[in-house]
View 1: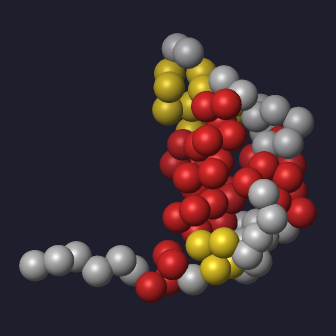
View 2: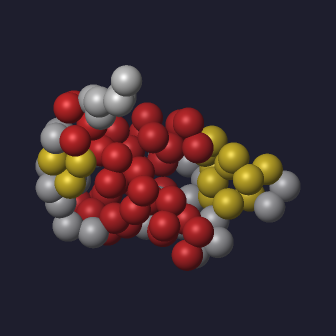
Length: 84
C-alpha cells in the first residue's frame, strides 16, 4: 500500500515577513518551510554541538522562536504560528 501525503501538508501557506527572511518568499507548503529552515540552520551552523536536536536562534530566527534556543520539535510548532 502506497502512503498518501497529507493534503494539508502540501497546501501552499502564506508566510509572515519574519519567516520569509529565513526561508525565502512564500507561499510554500509546510513541508518545504521545514526543509528550508533546516537548510538555513545547517548553513549558519546553528545546531547546538552538545545536543544536535537543539537549535540556536540568530537575528533572523529570534523573531520566530522568541528565545535563544529551541528543540527541533518546538521549531516546527513555532514556525507554524508564522503560516496561514
